[in-house]
Image (cartoon, rainbow, N blue to C red; front, side):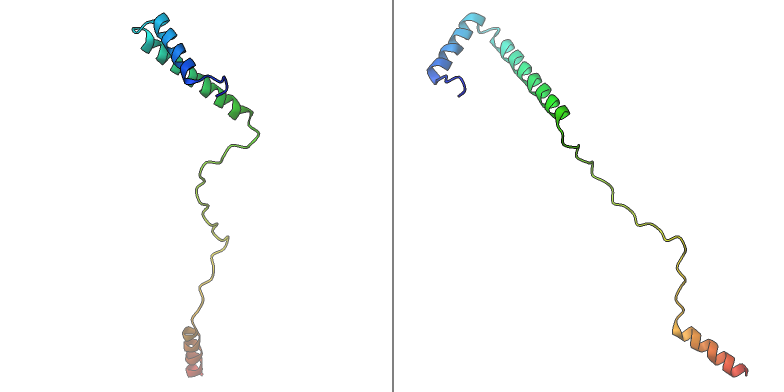
Length: 93
């Protein structure tokens, strides 16, 4: 512990606080101390985040859609169509 307080010293402090404040006000004082510590931690975290050099994490990006080609692709002509045209030309001659 940072202040080298043992269990006996902690018990002594708690008894003194109970005698000074009284059992009726003890829950109010406890909740006030808890709120104060919570606000201090939040403020400390906010200061650390504002002084942070790291860039903010990006929000989950939506996947990019592929770009459409500028000109539509020409449909491939099947070989059967080409042979039919040749046969019709041969029959006409």
